[in-house]
Structure formats: C-alpha cells, structure tokens
Length: 246
Image (cartoon, rainbow, N blue to C red; front, side, top):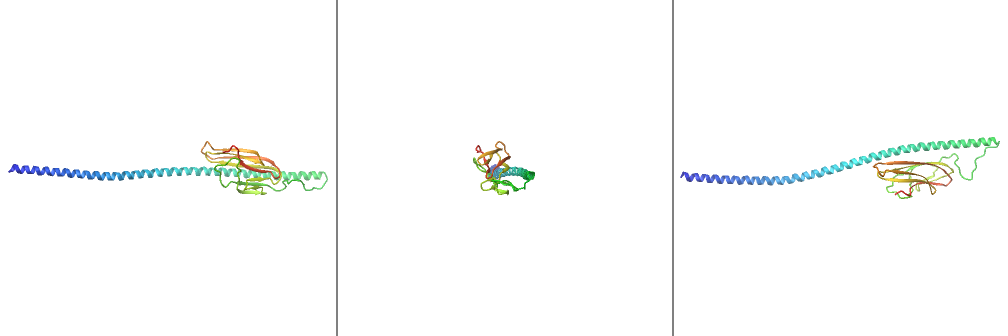
C-alpha cells in the first residue's frame, strides 16, 4: 500500500513539473513575441529619427550656404558702394575741372579781345559747344544678366543723375549733346564661377575694354574701366559685352 501511494506521488510530481515547464515555455514565447513586436517598432522609430536628423543636417547646411551667399552679396554691395563713391568723386573732379577750363577759356578770350582793342563779342560756332552747361549722368542696372550674349548692350535702367538728358536708359546709349572732352567710367561685377568681357564703344568703334573674371574661384569680382574721349556733337557712346564673351 505504501509503495503504491509513493508511486502515485511521483507521477503527480512528474505531471506537475511537466506542466510548469510548458508554462515557462509559453511565457518565454509570449515574451519573445512581445519583444519582437516592440523591437520592430523601436527599429522603425530609430529609422525615423535618423531620417529626421539627416533632414535637419541638410537644412543646417542649406542655411549655412545661404548665410555665406548673403555675406558675399553684402560684401559685394559694400564694394559697389565704395566704387560708386569713388565714381562720384571722379565725376565731381571732372565737373570742377571742366568749369575751370571754361572760366580760363572765357578769360583768355576776353583778354585777347581787349588787347586787340575790340569789344568782346559772344563766341559763335557752327557747331554746338559746351558753354556753361554741365553734362553728366550716373546710373546702374536694376537686375543682373545671368547669361549675357555677345555684343549685348548693357542698359543702366536706373538713372540717378542725367544732367543734360544725354543718356537714354531704354537704349543704354549716351549721345554727346556738344563737342568736348568726356570722361566715362563703368563697373562690372560677376558672381561666383563666372566672367564677362565688356567694351566701351563710341559709335561703332571699341574705345576701351575690361575683363571681370571669377571663373576659377568661389568669389565675386568687380572691375572698373575709365576712358577719356573727345566727342563731337551727336556721337553715341555705350557699354556692350565683348565679341569673345560667352
């Protein structure tokens, strides 16, 4: 009797241990399933975070690039302001010099007339001449040219000064209103990795040229040309791109 009871207890214990083992396996399987499910979500979230970080990095790089461009444009504007002030001083010097020459010419003529014992008479010419009237203009382009063509006339459509109304902002041409000596200056700026050749043309003949080149560097370049020309009434002066420009 005792032997039979002992055998029954062993059987019960064996069944209990087997059931507990199965429960542990089921629990482990459930944990694995939960972990796998959450791992997939975590992996997806990590992927999304990485993508967002990459997007933020690209935006930061874009912002840095834009800030650099703004800085370069500001520097370019500062350089242009310096050139404009320089040109204003040159124009004022030329105007003053022309006025002094006029006064000197009138005084010399008066002295010559007095020495000959005749009355001073007004100077008569068959062609108009500069006589007390100043001719000067200043202007700039309201927008740049991304791809200027060959022999393209550069029209400075924003005209700030046009004493004598000799400059036409629509055609970009200056027409000499009187015979005289004229001083012309022009400034051309190029953006990064670009270049342009420009000419000052009188009637149809090139009279001066400059090259503005930033083709090999990541920078803005500015060049200024100046010419002194003796013009006759009706001569036309304008700035155009060089035949070699592309």
